[in-house]
Image (cartoon, rainbow, N blue to C red; front, side, top):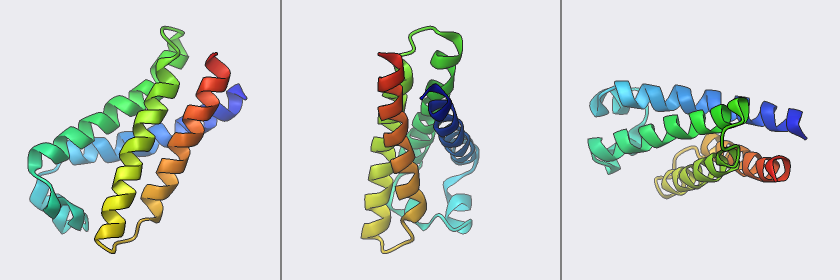
Length: 121
């Protein structure tokens, strides 16, 4: 199960880190121009906060498990990212936008949390 956890966490961390860093470093207007129309519904500060949570969550998936320091943080990070992505799925559904990528990441977050709690216990 540990190998499955590393695979799921690696994929999820890569996606969340990439998306989070991009949202942190790109202005709101540029994000909207790149096809992220959902940014119209949120302030620039909220977008940056979501991005920061994505980056911290991605680090939380990998670092505690890698270092052995507080490994319980790994499934908690998966839980947090799942919550963020469930919220993203709801936003995309309400806006009648493509929601499949957010749903897939939410499911990966749930899988990460379940596997993490099984491995870390």
